Structure formats: structure tokens, C-alpha cells
Image 1 (cartoon, rainbow, N blue to C red):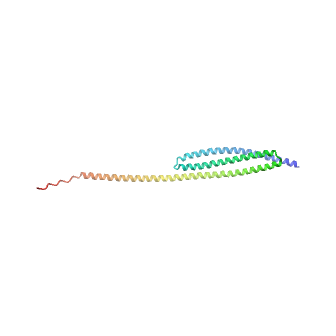
Image 2: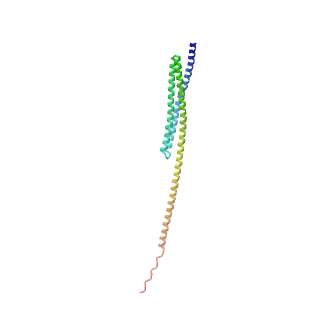
Image 3: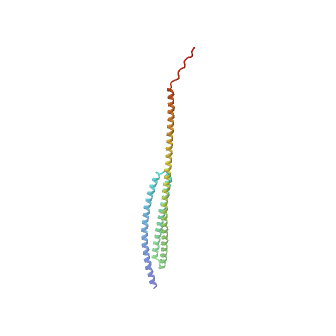
Length: 215
């Protein structure tokens, strides 16, 4: 009876190990896919940030614009790096599980059960880390989206303020030009009036000479 129980346990353990192997293979494929996705995201984001850098040089506050772009670039790249670290952790966990499985195959049923339990716990812990990382990614994406929206709103506000300032400066320049033109016309009118008066006085006949007194 004891032999039958051990045989049954070994069969169940083999089935579990087979399922674990399939799960590990699926996880390895998913890790490769995720690495490719991270690489593509990094290239796409960097191209976008470079385009934003170029656009900054066309704005009034160049350094402020570049600073905002660099802040979002650092946040985005840090998020991708965090994802890569999570994948590295997952890869190490899979390798550790594979090593435990190989040890189990050479151990007694009791040792195999202990190793299987450790492997199950390790996979559960790893899944918990993956869930936490996924939440961080979602929060990071939301924060990045909000930061971009705030940056665009700030840029629009700065542009609006600059447009208003330019409008006021143009109006002041126009008013000053109109005042200068009016003063020039007044000055010219006074000069013409003075010249006209001078010419009129020159045209008036000189007074007649008085007759000599009788001797």
C-alpha cells in the first residue's frame, strides 16, 4: 500500500513538473516578447523626445521647454529600466525554479515535495512582484500622461501670455509712432507759419521818407 501511495505521488509530481516546465517555457517566451517591446518603446520614445527638443528651439523659453522634455525623458526611461529589472528578476526566478526541479528529480519523495513547495512559493512571490510592477507601470503611464498634459498646458499659457505681451508692445509702439508723427506735423506747421510770417513782412513796402524841414 505504501509503495502504491509513493508511486501515485511520483506520478502526480511528474505531472506537476511537466506543467511547471510548460509554464516556464511560456514565461520565457513572454519575457522575450516583453524585451522586444521595451526596446521598441525606448526607440519610439527617444525619437519623440528628440522631436520635442527640436520644437523647443522654436519657442520663446527654450531652456524651460528643454528642461520639461528632459524631465519626462528621464521618467519614461526610468520606467522602461524598471520593467527590464523586473524581467531580469523573473528570469532569475525561472532559472532557480528549473534548478530546483532538476534537484527534485534526483531527490527522495519527501525532498521533492519540499522543493516543489519552495518552487510554488517562489512562483507565487514572483507573480506578486509582477502584479506590483504592473501597477507601477500603469501609475507611471498615468503620471507621464498627466505630466505631458501639464507641460502642454503650461506651454500654451506661456504662449498666450507672450502673445498678449507682444500685442501690448505692438500697441504701445503704434501709439508712440502716432504721437511722434503728430508732433512732427505740429512742428512742421509751426515752421511753415513762421516762414510765412517772415515772408509777409519782407513783402510789406518800407515806410516813406519824411520831407526835409524848411530852412
